[in-house]
Length: 104
Image (cartoon, rainbow, N blue to C red):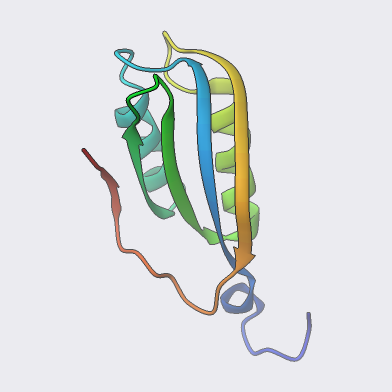
């Protein structure tokens, strides 16, 4: 882990997520976007036709982990999260996205 100048640059990661529960029609995407931006992360979020919310988050690992906790425990004020699935977590050399957007 050491040997890199500026260890934060070598610690970028990307993770895909799917959130289950009462997460559509409760501003979940908007709050996710705001939370991601407030943490300085990049990514995207969108509703699925099966009632879940999916997306991807990229950034420094400790901030991505904070976002994972928020996605699985908190969400938007009126959401009811029953399950959060995170997959394809990997270290990335640089951010592949810019900004945080809602996709349709």
